[in-house]
Image 1 (tube, rainbow, N blue to C red):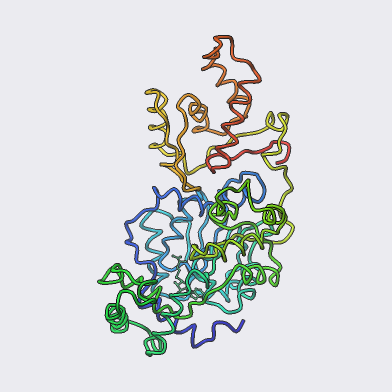
Image 2 (cartoon, rainbow, N blue to C red; image 1 turned 30 degrees about the vertical axis):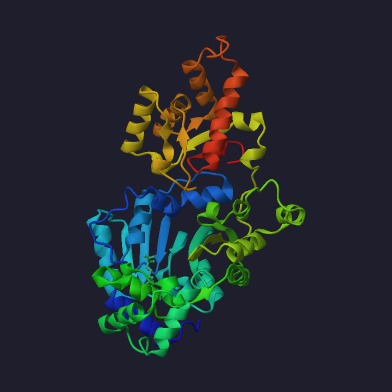
Length: 444
Ligand SMILES: C[S@@+](CC[C@H](N)C(=O)[O-])C[C@H]1O[C@@H](n2cnc3c(N)ncnc32)[C@H](O)[C@@H]1O
């Protein structure tokens, strides 16, 4: 693999040896950052791809380009029982990553000073590879993806991401300005960072580059990391959705999904998705996922990262989408509460809401759709048995009948079919919002 050139690789290594990333204090724990844990949980992409639920125990997870190991810690917290292996070219970063995992009591973790190109030297096959904020430093994306693919188990999953050339356009302009000014010739340190701050502050506020990139958060000691990662990032490059798909094709990897896929929904950009102009109404439903994502990035380039999951080809287990299940499918379904919701706070508040008959704001605990979601306390009680273990769907229907033996309007006994459909409706909406997983027993 020829990229990045050894000169650039040295510059990148130097940058991260003098300023290991991220500068998150050792004590900080991601335990309560359920949204971060949600995307780092192997269960999330596995369920998306296979509509099945896996156990993370004994899975082997690689954090490629782990930096100071904050994401390695997130991976360890999100995947109980998994082994974490971190690699990075920066020795200083690796020291901090090792300390971080030890500090938080994870002894099933190991860290190596190693470049991603040297991965096969480790002699591991991984269930999951997290390659966060690194791939965009390369110009031959497929070559890096191929190295990761070579150490990925057949049913394993890779998560990686690229900087968006469209969303980040202004920062790439700024990087060019500072390259012309010579600030990127050597390793940018305090002097160069100071020159960036002075230059940006000296510009009039309505000057385009300043208006589009600058804010006071870049000033002072706390702003330094952001200055480096935005204005003076050695090797930073921008890509598009079509670059991502073409690299995946070259590396012979299957696209699984965007991470945060709910925020890439083209239909949500329209005022009335069910009432589109005739041409769009006829063509949009038939276009490929690649075209949908391309249109999204052109129409609404709000995402800094083109963040995706992929895996070996032909590994997706065929399944019937939940929305197409018949009642007999539902009768053989096991319901799992999302692991990130099984916290003491969640349990306490759920019980309090049911006891005090007030709505339960579930989005306070996990918010994959970034929407406010509140559940009526009477139906929220179906979640209680899920806190301890997964439940057959029909036992949740039984529970509903026990607590609602009488229809509150007609005062007649609750009808079996009515109870079944009430619970089904609740589960369908909770599944689409990412709070529960539905496992079809005959499919898995
Ligand atoms: C922006 S940081 C991301 C750190 C971490 N993944 C995160 O998201 O918090 C990029 C990291 O990749 C490392 N890196 C750069 N090129 C690399 C390579 N060829 N092989 C392994 N690590 C590399 C850098 O040393 C740095 O620690």
